[in-house]
Image 1 (cartoon, rainbow, N blue to C red):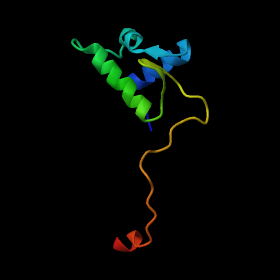
Image 2 (tube, rainbow, N blue to C red):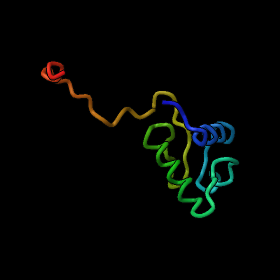
Image 3 (cartoon, rainbow, N blue to C red):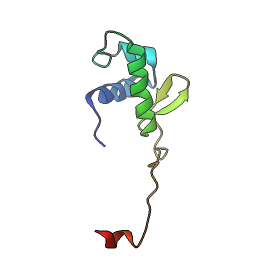
Image 4 (tube, one colour):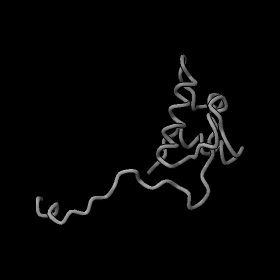
Length: 88
C-alpha cells in the first residue's frame, strides 16, 4: 500500500523522534491543513494508520512505528470456496 503525502510526513516524523501524539501531529508542517478541528483530523489520520497496521498505539493518543514482524495482518478473512471459481 502506497502512503499518502500526509502519512509519509507522519512516518518521517516518527522515525526522527520515536513517537507522535495528536498535538505533535498538528505541529508537523503539511499535515494539519484544516482551519477548524485540526486535532480531530490528525487523530483520524493516526487512527486510520493504526487500523491499517502502519502504526501501533502505545497509549491513548500516542503512536509509534511497530517493530519488525508485528505488523497487523489483514482483518478480512480469505474464504477458500471451491465453487466460487466456477461462478466466473
